[in-house]
Image (cartoon, rainbow, N blue to C red):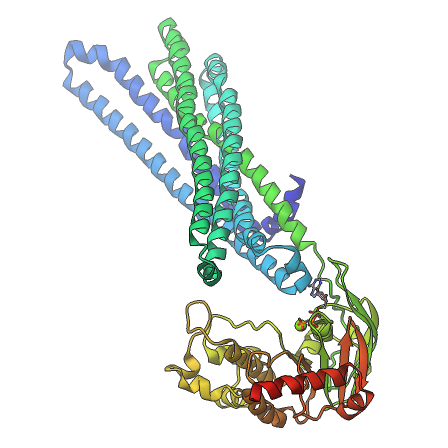
Length: 592
Ligand SMILES: Nc1ncnc2c1ncn2[C@@H]1O[C@H](COP(=O)(O)OP(=O)(O)OP(=O)(O)O)[C@@H](O)[C@H]1O
Ligand SMILES: [Mg+2]
């Protein structure tokens, strides 16, 4: 129960819905509990007058009995109708409240996710994150909605029905109540079995879904390696497991219903048996007996729901615990209230080292460099040397393990995160486009941009002409169901997006890896104009001799091996020089 404490905060928020809901539950029960009295009255009226009517055929008496019965019947119907109206309002308040809480909680979780760093998303798989937003929140809703509603109903129902029964006949009440705890306990047990098995089914279903999802995304690889049969067989096996688990649930379910009918039947039988005896002895009227049968039936539902409510509460507590676990994770990047600062463009790395927290892989060692506003720098290095890590540190996806990064001589950790990220635009190495139009993908960082601005940036990225060749131009939908773009096109659209953000600092992480040398020439030509007054960091495997870099750093095994201008590095005859030569040779052979 303690793990559900965070949910009760929400109950407080919607206290008026909750309180009026509770009042409606109470009122519905008042009308429910008085209704059987009229049935009892009807039976008693008939049984008192039956003999008299049979012998005398008194028309006047018959009419008055009939009128009496009609009044009771109408009253019964009216009470039942009013009860139905209150029940409607009870659902309109409590269930509506639970939906609002669900809405709030989903938003809270999603907002929290959005603040967490990539490290968190590496640690937790997408399926798990999704299931917390969807399933766990849904289970908590079951608690604040149906469970609370039925529990309140149960309490009122119990108090009122037992009150009425005691006022009619305490002995009979005691007899009738005997089988009910048994009913409640057995329902609780069966329900736990059902829940456990449902859980297994749920887990198996998510396995099935991820297998399907993965094989659809990887269909090209599967088909290229002719592994369709194996994949199908694997899926088949998991499906079979799912079927077995579903059947085992169905078996318990099938037992559950008859068990309930049996136990409820036992209660009713006991009432008729003991009550009937009392009628014969003259201690109870036939009408009261009928009323009792009503009450027993009335009690069986709350008693049944008790087991159900308890198991919902248990599940909700487990779910809320998982939700709270996530909400308590602090973002790795602290963002305190520092005065706003828009980076102007000068950057300094001071003895920056970085080790990835989860794997303990040292990705950067003692990296220092300085860039003034408007300067251009290239980072060159073998794969795995730490280039992308520099980019990630720059816009604070991670904080350095040692050393400091300065923007305009202010440590990055003292600049509000939002300002810092507005000031740095990045073209990531692994391009990501949303399932949306090209226009919206480019305008992602600047939704109010005009079509002209979007086109201008597409021109800087040398992708405008290709976009115009699509039948729908900028309105072409990309992503899962849209047109599939080539790797190079995606890269350049991603570049156009970064250009449109128009930040003083821009980082291109291997942004030209998927284009050929000619296109590369064109792109660099177009880009140069755009980069004029920007501080630019260009990460690459290849040596560019087209662009004048103010500084080139060569990363080797996570540290800076060489640093200088093209001429200086060539004169040094080190790594850079060798790389340049081997590249020249490669392009010569290609040309031949
Ligand atoms: N999220 C991560 N968690 C743990 N280790 C990582 C992570 N990302 C990268 N690494 C490791 O850090 C080192 C540097 O990686 P980085 O991505 O910076 O290399 P890179 O120079 O960009 O390589 P490439 O040219 O292939 O893109 C590598 O050894 C890599 O295995
Ligand atoms: Mg990289």
